[in-house]
Length: 384
Image 1: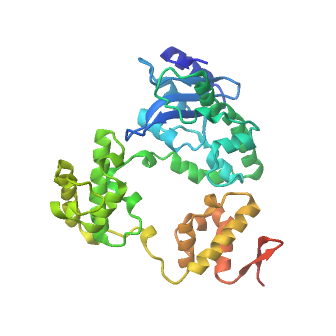
Image 2: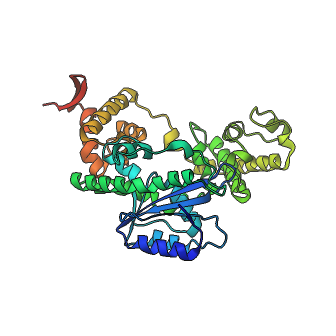
């Protein structure tokens, strides 16, 4: 096996794959020491048996033929658990593959469980096994061994069979539209635009005070911008625990910052410490009336904990009966919202999710449906 390292060879390979109805794609990358992923290898395969490995680290290699293939509307691009692969393609060329298919999402719809691994699908669908000895390879080092290349190539060759089986199952069950919402999120540029102004959302946790959130917005935004400009992981700038501590304590002096348990000794007197204190001050001048506590951070009222637990049982029963992963139908947040409000603006009360589960959930909530156990399985029955 040889790595494609010249632009003409890549162009020829992409032209052959573009003639296929679909192409399977995977990438290998490193990001342990960087903010942005470092692309180290591209793997592609087609249903005609052709497969190739591309070396993006090769000097002088132009990846434009690859990006053109990703944008080719006549060929479906198939990935497994595609989010990080798509992020790389977005960073490379400012585009996202289309048409697009994620076998992990499709597998959830086809009853293979939540977030099913590629290895499991290879075992269950392709009836093959993967040699895992090269799983923890440093893909940035050259040369790569034949074993490493074979492992990488297997990530796309088995995917051909997996895609064909899952696509056929979606047609058979008429569930193709069920994937649209998930695929739309994955192929939205907003998913991959790491805006520092939104960095606080992943850390808001259980914060309920607008002042804490205001400080969090500024400190998390500063850290995100700093990590991006220096191309280092967020934790190299400031660990999550420290950002949360700063948002909660809101230190406004060098001494107060130094007293936080998550701040290393002496850190508060550095340039970074001064920038953190400046971010805290920006949080204090924010208009608190314009800061809404995130919905997921609120404690839902009404004593609906028991009802939410019942809805979880119903969700599991419906998912098992329909052969679909619960995660693709509803989240815990959806169930909590539904328990509070019959007309909540959540996916589970819209479209196919409503007909599959949402209406049953409302019926259970209002005593028109009951759960029982028969022969060790939860069953759902409508009450007269």
